[in-house]
Amino acid sequence: MIELRPHKELGGAHHGWLDTRHHFSFAEYYDPNRMNWGNLRVWNDDTIAPHSGFPRHPHRDMEIITYVRKGAITHQDSLGNRGRTEAGDVQVMSAGTGIAHSEMNEEDETTQIFQIWIMPNETGLPPAWGAKPFPKGDRSGSFVTLASGLPEDKDALPIRTDARMVAATLEAGQSTEYRIASGRKVYLVPATGQIKVNGVVANAGDGVAIRDEEVLTVSANEDSEIVLVDVA
Image 1 (cartoon, rainbow, N blue to C red):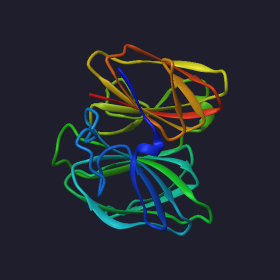
Image 2 (spheres, rainbow, N blue to C red):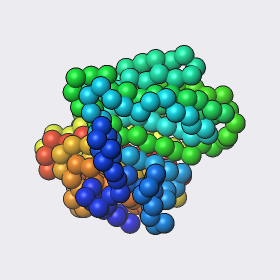
Image 3 (cartoon, rainbow, N blue to C red):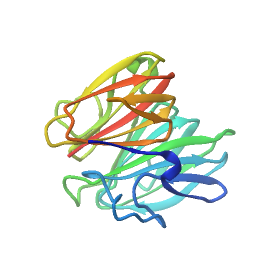
Image 4 (spheres, rainbow, N blue to C red):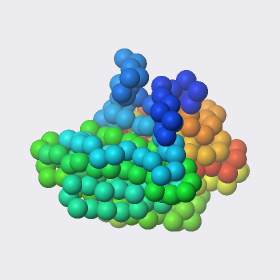
């Protein structure tokens, strides 16, 4: 089953400094049919104006992944962590028993991010944060694992959940495959370009919800960057 969720049909809001689209129910957007996809709870597509952002606010018991599509985001939290994550790189935050953080666009240009929340396997653990650069060339033509809670993904940023996030950059005409283990679900969004997923066309920003498929063949109609989350 492959369900296309066009970008223009997603929930969302305009806040002046923030233009956001919600793939799942979030804030004032509520759709009982789009509460989650497996243990994937939130996928927000955020465009943040220069010199603005999310001031310090708390989270608890959630695995939060930030994938920077354009520009950069600067993180600061109550554990004393501070870091700047640039386009193509990823940061993860395990909220655990509680953490407060800010996510600011301190740049002179617009920043675009995917913010992805995945429900943890276990609650009440100590909070943690980490970031890692992943040069786009390392995933040219195929998927590379960026963050994962699966034991086989030893080089990825760790998250405390039965899930992984991968990304790929494909040139027009290129294709790659992703295999899905039995009983798992996948949610995929092209960050840029236009792709086909087992024959279904998806444009930049569209969501693609997938279950009961063994192999995904992803081909690029245009130069494309793809982010995929594999969940229980």
